[in-house]
Length: 188
Image (cartoon, rainbow, N blue to C red; front, side):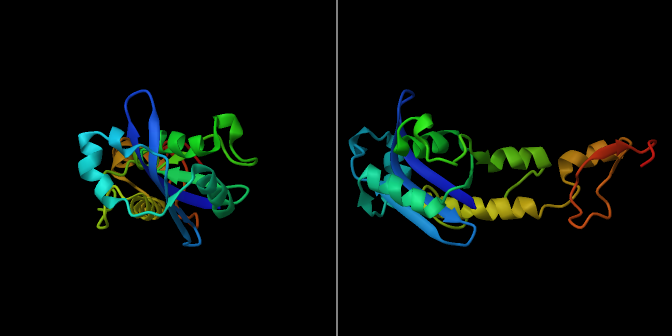
């Protein structure tokens, strides 16, 4: 099951302290929680201005959040986030070390920004909901993923390659998505 998520956190270059987590499943179900033990007095000015006003509870113990996320995500989740590195660490730390992740869970997260670059898509849809609210951001991340999955088969990044003498070998495939490029001189 695909899960799109976001976290808000306090970080100082050495530690990442989770402030909130929001998740969206591909069936549309959502989850949101805030750890009750996070010391919000350690927040930077940026977090105080841009994140703390959007925290809305519920406040829960970290072990309860971890247990609820296991139930929410299931046994074989595929996680997606936007600029996912810190979010993935913050989520995984709910369970302890990376080795403590639930059985069947991946030790990596897929990244919307990386997908965007690989497809050669210049811009993602604008987020019209509250930014820096973990659930709103997770919902937007799903929207961005859906947008990328329906992106034009010839994104800007590939058009130059195609203009220079290559052709799309996916023409005629059901999805119409680029699955490979070959030199126009080669025979299929």
